[in-house]
Length: 144
Image 1 (cartoon, rainbow, N blue to C red):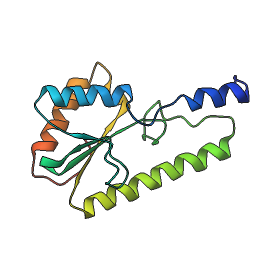
Image 2: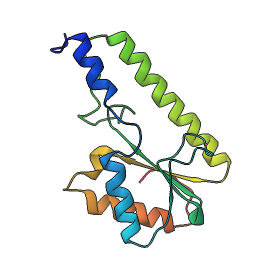
Image 3: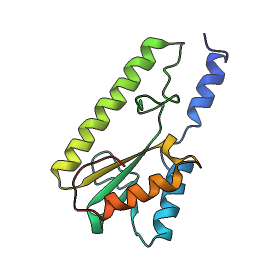
Image 4: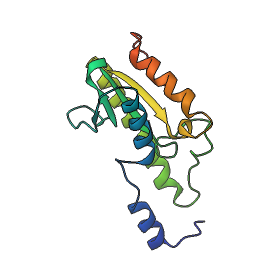
């Protein structure tokens, strides 16, 4: 059972942004400081990637652990109330993500995924180093 009223929960959820989030901002600032130049949320590409690096034919998605069902992550818990709604909603998110990643790969883009939990202070530097190495490598595999 949810501890918030339906109206309060709705208000909270309406305040969640899909672009210009703090995790996206941290990654963008890091990339810029390392000399990378990019586009943000390019609508011309499938899935509207959070960061597009045209020079490297790479796109980066900064995924929230909850919204994109990060397996094995404590932040990816399904809410206990309105279970059927959330189950369908989150499964659709994951399905859509996989379809968009596949379409991008078919168009010749390297897809990198950074999870929200990988941006905490303890592992931020390590995550960013892996990401930069993936951007600069010739390997077409995805994920950071």
